Length: 283
Image 1 (cartoon, rainbow, N blue to C red):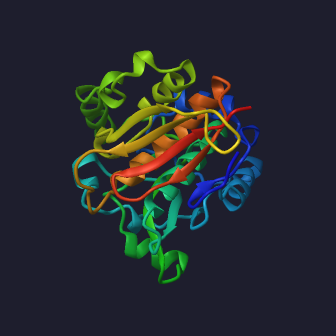
Image 2: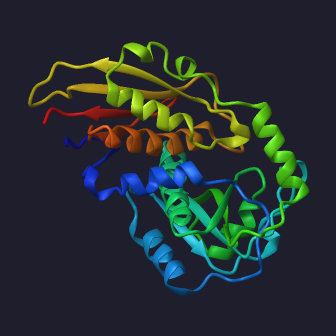
């Protein structure tokens, strides 16, 4: 791999590809939880993961084992239903970085998939977060910002009214066709198609799926990538829940899909609507 400004340098074998792809398949957002607090080896393993998985400078996940209910009282929860969660994953980024939201999305989704693999229930929450309360709870520095959180705990057997409403809304807003998010995909290499198909299942705020992909074959050589995939979004960004956060989540899903097809590479983060570029280097 090659390293450049804003790049993420990591060997593909450091990601548990199969484990996280399987977690992505079975993960369902849950809003009702038991009162049981997180404890035991699985909770310890997740906390260790959150402390040590920092693929991007300026982004981290914090596990809050005892989350006060007042942090789950943002405006969006009045629409989709309240969350009753004993614990939380908090996705923190350095607000001074223009690509901090994408970094937080990538890092946070990794923690959510690892939590799912450890049999915990989760639910990404953006507009339902009282960020000031969370930042106060964690004692964050002035330059740190809470970009989103996830509920965390053991799922209740009871499916709440809010969950049923959310499920109906999700069915009404189906996944966008592959050719919409990646025009020309049918003519692209198999590893790119695998990456885009994995990214298509990534969660996003109100299921808006803002990510788009463009493929460029490159002149293979010692100083040039064999191919690149650009990840971007159309239109303007949104103030409360950034589209860049959603795209950061999709970055991880694309990487998992590409790795599953035998293609390793590295991300270079961009600014503006161009969120990131994945470079596959010649073996």
